[in-house]
Amino acid sequence: MKKVLILCTGNSCRSIIAEALINAKCEGICADSSGVKASGRVNENAKKLLEQKGIWKEEYHSKTLDTVINNEYDLVVTVCDHANETCPMFPKPVKKIHIGFEDPDGKGFEAFEKIYEEIESILLPKVVDAVLS
Image 1: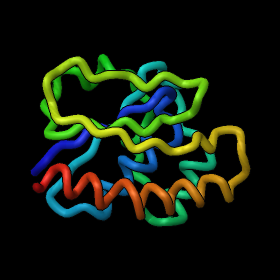
Image 2 (image 1 turned 90 degrees about the horizontal axis):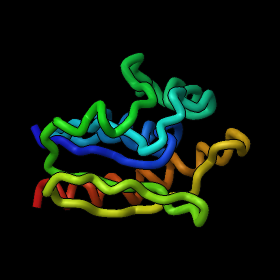
Image 3 (image 1 turned 180 degrees about the horizontal axis):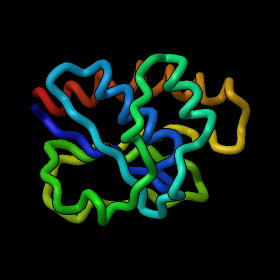
């Protein structure tokens, strides 16, 4: 089983959606997520969307980098690309890729649906390619 860490700033929307999608749809790959300034909560729209898609798990929660820093990963993916945010860096030597997505936090439910579709169509194939190649 290959292990992937999805990193962002708040660990409440994009990284949680990416973690859930990878765990649900990428055979042979297991994902975690965390944030450099974890919000401590999962955005309600992100949770609602993942519940609607049937891939929400109660263990998904907002967590800081120090809670996963000692785990071994095959790939680290950063997903924050907003001008006002700074993507965290993972300090251990591991393959890293960046695939930025707009932060849907504070926007309507349709923004979360759009990000879900973008993560599924853009991020998942790149993660599979990076981990299994």
